[in-house]
Image (cartoon, rainbow, N blue to C red; front, top):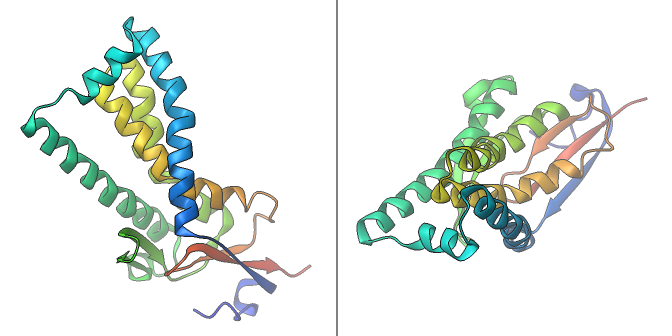
Length: 196
């Protein structure tokens, strides 16, 4: 799909917006720290234990448990991209045929790509769905069932979605009827601005 094909999307122009993968990774670390520290304190209050004990409980694992945690994290990374794909396929005209997956090997970063423009609101939903499903929901549940592993899982996947959150935030002033085309080899999109 060429970004110059404006007429099909009722647009008169387009704008490309990207963030570097290194910037997105740096943002993930910042979000992990900024959200993690207060979450650990709140979790410790909820569990009625010292913060140090929350961290020790999450990190106190044997070899088998460490391997399980690693496999769960790898599975979570794959699920993150599959969730993007599932939601984009719901909104793309050609469904799953418009979805592809890959890895940017120079950054060891998996990606999901939708080759068709979708409405802005659909782009936002598809972009944020993994962060909500794998990050926010487990984080909230970790306080309910008082589980430190789930707390760390939720924090990690909120941090992993911080680039998606940032991209959606850059769309907040755009007209909801615009179409947005995901970029395959970059973290970003092309937005087709509506004709007035």
